[in-house]
Figure (cartoon, rainbow, N blue to C red):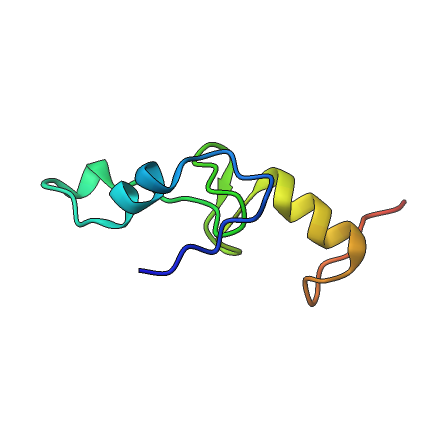
Length: 70
């Protein structure tokens, strides 16, 4: 099991490990951000939470994503 949580982690290692286990029912799946472990505000397409997505997108580290201006 590899933990990729950064220093500004919002979850403990135990919570993250528990979310990796296969649940008894498929509706209990907990998807977590791979950077910080946050489970709320998760974007499936990028496997990130909204906060980490915004940080990476503003730095230009997500290919094909740029801030809208009109």
